[in-house]
Image (cartoon, helix red, strand yellow):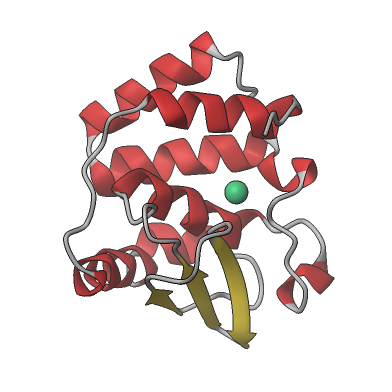
Length: 150
Ligand SMILES: [Zn+2]
């Protein structure tokens, strides 16, 4: 599947990155809780803020994605091979950059407009802050290679 635009560029950049995978869904949940409880997250949350995200893994193959279950309660579903630190940061960035209010009810985060320059910038910030500076530098290198707008 070839994906064009900024979304495709982001996917290409991510595919070249080598980052760690969580060894358990519990580890992914601990990571998510740390992000969602941080002042950094609260300062950037759109209204109403998502205060807790349930990490669901594994879900049948398809695409990972973000969902809003209730006000302030999100869910990220990861397919069997997707539970990486980088993917975790990607999906969290969607919660901070949904553009339309109705995406809270019906997120369509596989679209081009959901992978805007603002989204890419937010993903990079999450990687640098919550994964590692080295992972952030790696992602940014491939953002530049693939001409991601961020
Ligand atoms: Zn996405």
